[in-house]
Length: 178
Image (cartoon, rainbow, N blue to C red; front, side, top):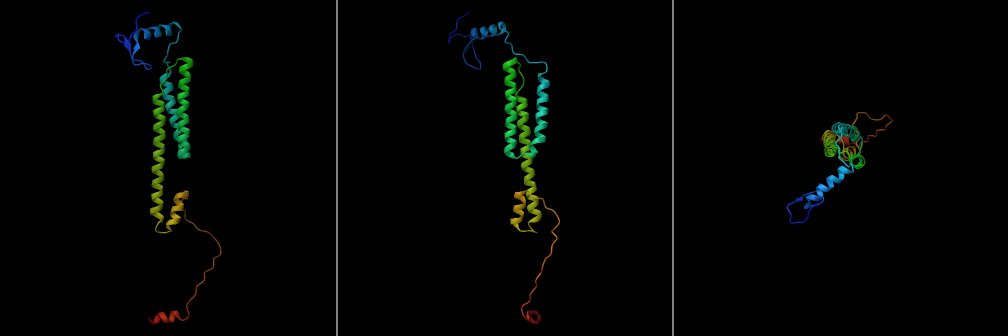
């Protein structure tokens, strides 16, 4: 079909080789056309990308507050891998080229935003509990409330209690003299 050599000016940069012969690039294109291996951007591709971003984003925003940090990370990673797997499958089986960057970026941004919000909210709650109750109850109890996530509440418990008062012999009359 044509001459190829490193010194020739007909060199093309491809994802596979920085000096790919131009004649082989043309031959690959012709082979793909003849065998009908054509990449297609479907007419619904932009709608799919938008729906993907919306559904995954809203789903993660509803799900992540109920999970801990580790499970949130695991679920987000699985969603991202599922998105990549779906795109890869559609590319290999149908030849459809769909956007993958924006859905992955949106998924990451939602996860990061929800994680940061949760972390900052927890810090705010912790500071509130410490500031409010540290003057009324022991520091150990406040630490336990923050650690275990116990919400402060008014109340007490009903029960029979016994109070025992004692006096040192003649201490009252002695202290009145002082």
